[in-house]
Length: 628
Image (cartoon, rainbow, N blue to C red; front, side, top):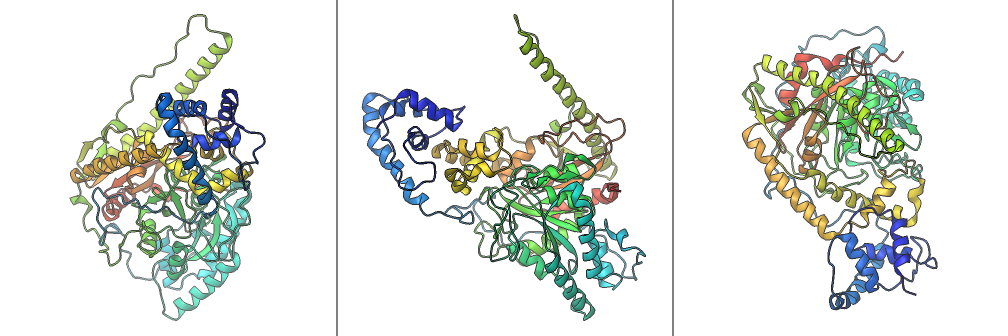
């Protein structure tokens, strides 16, 4: 049985197609257009033959053609054969952990990184005199990793006491903030006892020894579920710890919990609810490193590990007022972490200070022999002496006053419904502009502070490239990573099912042409080269956290440090009644704002040097939410 035009269009509608897409269109359309064909994922399908009429429609969807009758005749046999080639590969049932046979390296030229710098010269040089002990261990909840480490080293507090304190706080505040998926209590208590024994015996492993931490629940931990925050994966587990978990174990750190993430690393909604912002629990924490940022901000763990593909460390760090480090792509191995995009996924720390991030990065960086994208960064120099010698740029247009707001005007013969929609859109635009104008004060104050520190700011601009047009390549990789989820129909188990959520995005990605995927990655090569050229002019770039740079630098793999940059005042625009999760600037009075520092590939030392100096000069990292 062949498909007629009506059946073909019905199949398009079922697939949710709204824009020009692909070649693989032919496979799905032929499969879905016949009621007699088994459901997606069933074995031994009998697919309809591709017809010239189907080819005409597919060509329109893919934005190619039109083809002549002779051309279509020549194409049909090859198209049917090509479609048949999908089945044996799908039959392999490849797990999420299997990467493609290509590797993204972010450098502008092909080279193996053998040396890089990890931290800067801003580490606080604490005197070695005996630190003061606190009478109430709860007073240490918001203490930095550096200071907790000194207390442990001087035997002023035990790892076991710290671990129990943080476990108690996690249990106490989880009912309001919803940041815990799994407590690793038994494992944590055993690790803490071991750490205390080793420290007492003089076997000190370093600054993370005995420090409690939490993992975003896309990191595998043997003996515990690894849920990826997604319905249908609640009981998933793996028999080996992720490389990052292994390295933190080796550093003596104590894993107390696995934290929430938006389902399959999108947003802050997971199968257990929505993770909340400690500064304003009526709002979400943003995501997808939702629980990691929320728990750190709430003083429920000393540091956490998050991940970022396109904002998942930056956004929750901004919303929750944390310090987040998104390392250079390839700096930290992702073995044992859920894959969303093999060419964009990055793991990094979320903590209370730049120095804390630096200490964690020192423990987790470097190739592991398994993640083929992880760079060889062993035996690295560990310091950058003088941040005042750095050339500091800023993205001038991002700090400039925006253009005058243009509101939609009434159209002739406008209906009442159209008027209502236009007026609502105009009001939303006014509110968004008011928030942007308010937050811009903090960004300009940051530039003034840097100048007061003696920094000569050099204006720079991002290269003019279509960064957003490259993002569908990410979704295509995600659709491949979760191919079985879509093909089996289990995507209906995910909590969120809107037009922007993964189930629909993965279905649409099935129609993204292979040629366009390659073209998008060629465009990324241009972006890598041109953005990298900026760091030949300057060493570090200061920028607002939002804006085009967030997409651009995730595509190019450049590192970023996100810092809290103050709290909005009582005069700030009020937060909306409903948090749609789309913006990080809606917190309202008393909520944090952020600032971002960027550097060249594997230049974390320079990045940390300046950002650490700014953080020490402002002290914004010392402010924390009042939870009780």
